[in-house]
Amino acid sequence: MDIFKRVAAYRAESDRLEWSGTFKDYIELLKVDPTPAMTAHARVYEMIKSHGIEEIHGHKRYKFFDEEIFGLDRAIEKLVEEYFHSAARRLDVRKRILLLMGPVSGGKSTIVTILKRGLEKFSRTDKGAVYAIDGCPMHEEPLHLIPLEIRPEVETELGIRIEGNLCPACQLRLKTEYGGDIEKVPVRRVLISEEGRVGIGTFSPSDPKSQDIADLTGSIDFSTITEYGSESDPRAYRFDGELNKANRGLMEFQEMLKCDEKFLWNLLSLTQEGNFKAGRFALISADELIVAHTNEAEYKAFIANKKNEALQSRMIVMPIPYNLKVSEEEKIYSKLIHQSDMNHIHIAPHALRSAAIFSILTRLKETKKQGMDLVKKMRLYDGQEVEGYKEADLKEMQSEYSEEGMSGVDPRYVINRISSALIKQDLQCINALDVLRAIKDGLDQHASISKEDRERYLNFIAVARKEYDDLAKKEIQKAFVYSFEESARTLFENYLDNIEAFCNWTKLRDPLTDEEMDPDERLMRSIEEQIGVSENAKKAFREEILIRISAYSRKGHKFEYRSHERLKEAIEKKLFVDLKDIVKITTSTKTPDENQLKRINEVSKRLIDDHGYCPVCANELLRYVGSLLNR
Image 1 (cartoon, rainbow, N blue to C red):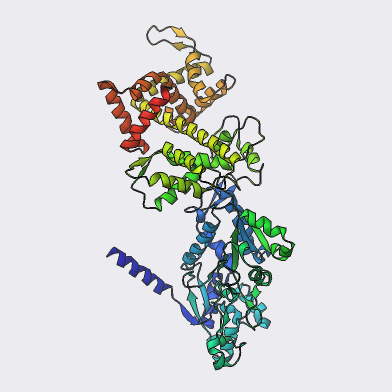
Image 2 (image 1 turned 120 degrees about the horizontal axis):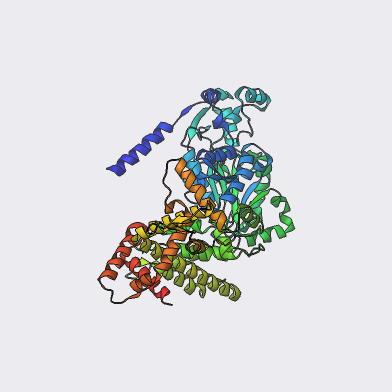
């Protein structure tokens, strides 16, 4: 019953959105709120903006794209600001075709799909409402009814701009049905719909010999020519081409540069003048955003052809590279897996991360910055702290190569290999090793990978494996440390006592003998060295901890070892070093005694309850880390 209630509610909402009246009623509506008269470009920009904008380090993140697009914030910001925002303000870029250019499976078609779905939803809101002449095959803007001579006065009164002329069908109806009286022309609210062919058009290239230009501009209705006597009579013409139906919204050209040239020439006038030629009629006005997508190889071939210069000058090319952040790449894989029917198979923590590390490494370029290798660069790109490098270094590296992210392994290949690992029979869980093994096995089947690239990729799989080994040891370390929570707290308090004495040039007092002692430099360095704090940096690090304690105290908060991420890591690593033999023996013994078995069960429970493992992968992790420690 819930399903039918929701369907009924949806239909009731659609009925509520219906509006019909005369052109006079529409003008009264615009006097209250002129937004329905905005252009298609402005509608798309307002739609994007309505979902919210977040400022991060001087950059804008548009939340409209959050659910489907990951790691392309900089490319999206450029797309919205340089094209959609400018076009919404009627700057000249609105007279250009938006061409999304990038590597395969990079998100180009996904961006267009999001825009189309977004427009459909936005047209159902008050701010995104679209009104059209009732019965017009092109869902035409009713303001086109106003004669050119008096438009300046109307524009001033309503605070709007009127562009375009009536389509041939509406011109004839105005004359024959309404006797030229524009007040009586019916107007209704329309909902943008790709399925209903309202405000969204899609053109996909096929065999040039069989594809007809009528797919774009409509065609003569031969069954009515005898009735109306002329091919130039609008009633004998079907205004049902994709350009006709995309009016007031968005026109998508799939794989645009694969289209035959004769289909592309129609866009010259449409982009520059806002009209196109169809049948034996004058130029037909159309207000639509034209967005196309292509890959880099086809784009380079296109611009190399001098015959394409006129069309090329009418394009705004937006590069859409691969994502370069490991955490965002994980989200891509997770989204694609959740869309499948394989949700019953558990994916161990860090399995997708290991695949993402491999993918990102294949896309990064070696930097000229001294001491920065690809792994450090990968971490910096992912928002992690890398000692010795600041945000300025990150920005410098991001601008070092304009083509970074335009090559490397595509997400489609990786998700195919993860799928091959998931589909194995009698599988309850897959871990990082299963995923990396599947990626490695697939390299031999990947025809487009050169021998040189294959060697590089094998090396990146090894790097991803090493990163996973570190993560696996850290995971066990955390589980064991939490089992020895008191030890961590004691070590932490001891460290704080020593750094306070060091920074204040004071002595410590032995709790048993009451003797004065110098701060234990050996203890402090044994902790600090775990996170790479150098001898020269130790004083600054210790002072920074004391400042943090003071800040916590002023706010009435207690400073604990988890309060400082790097100190927490150092304490846990130090404990792990001290406990290494216990961990090693406990995880690798084949016949654990009662105490060892109890500890194994405690650690397994911690992994399952707190870290997202299942009993299968928790047990595998314990055995794997045991083997690592025995090497």
